[in-house]
Image (cartoon, rainbow, N blue to C red; front, side):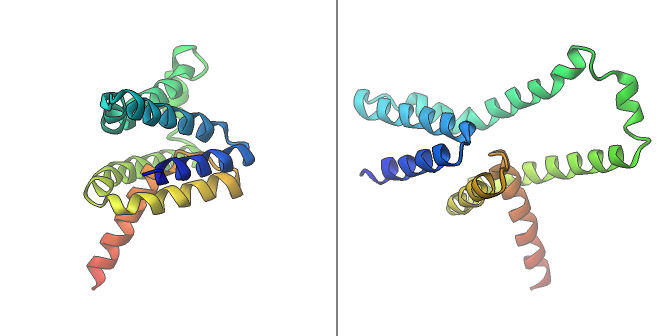
Amino acid sequence: MYSEYLTLGLVLLLSIIGHNMTVVYATVIVLVLKVGSQLFGVTSAMTYMGTHGLNLGIIVLTAAVLIPIADGTVTLSDMIDSFKTPIGIVGITAGLLAAIAGGAGVPLMQSNPHVIPALLVGTMAGVFFFKGLAVGPLIAAGFTYFVMALFSHFQ
């Protein structure tokens, strides 16, 4: 019954030790939703976050990435010029692959929820030990999908 709290508390503690405020805030939000659902019997907020949180996060992330276009830091000319440099071409390719991986990751997590703890542990390790960002579970799920599909192809 309390294992969820213990696990979330451990994630919170490790996030504080690792100075990763993004994971601290996310864990606190989830803990508040969990406590609220336990105390008041209202599970709709936690259910909504579980169902729509990923899309909401992607919307906010995409909006943040579009700000340089809105404030004029990045122009249409800059975007066109990105096709002309090696780093621009690599960036376009990386963005394409990340989008494809993310698209494959969502169905993987929905059909195989048992993979989610492994994705979280890998993401947390990347955050804590390599100063990464906690944007990894979705992309990691996509890469996991590709690796599993590759293994299936060669079996």
